[in-house]
Length: 337
Image: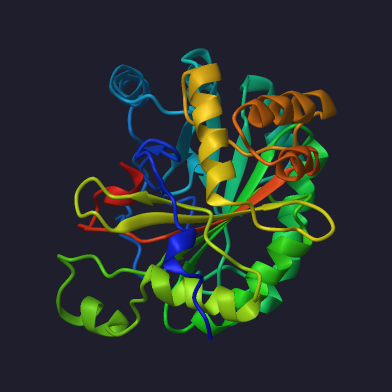
């Protein structure tokens, strides 16, 4: 088992991959539970729409983000979700939804896309009590992931991300999800593996029930490197609080070969986005041919190797490994701040 050497890392600016989460209260309509979730269930309650819009305004004033992702609970339960998506879009951000997908339908996707939705991040893993899928391992859940991914593609023009929480019980099967995502790089632009962390203020029987399940991002990286000998980290985002690698990103060209891009190319792409758009790149999507050609030409002008620059026309898929920091029950984890 080998871990990619440290000299392949490149320290990206803190804001490079920021995703700002607007939290909505979970409700009785969404009954899925995830092991070790740091959110509580306030049945039947919703954050007032005015409070959500005010939070978006605060983000616009304080953070130069690219994406605002709406999570929960599950945002598909929120009665004012179309208004929230529309307001995020009007505020100059790419609106995303982080959802377990249980309530997702083609009709809903079409209506949210009409409001300005840019993408969906689907949380699917074996740690959920998902009806009809309880007790399945990660490989057995891949057909469900496939169904969701194809639904998002059919909607047209939306980015499709997946995330999976990894603890000791499913670490060994993370490779099956990695293989599925890499085989579907045309469908899945980003696959996120989140290292499981027990909330620090969780005590008593609830803590005892999940004690010993924590993993570190390095454990996940080692598992993926064992699965794919070509796997390497293309960049990292370090925490401003602790200095640890909060996001580790392995970005690869799509299509045959699928070589992982160099730290220099990832850094140049982020700096190009910042200088061109005023924001670091936070949304992955398939580029039109002319967009890929323009990006390649600009990267060439910044010293990126021609072979790497032109391979951008295939598109890029990212594999992200996330290390949570301090988690306090019913509060946002720092890796989303």
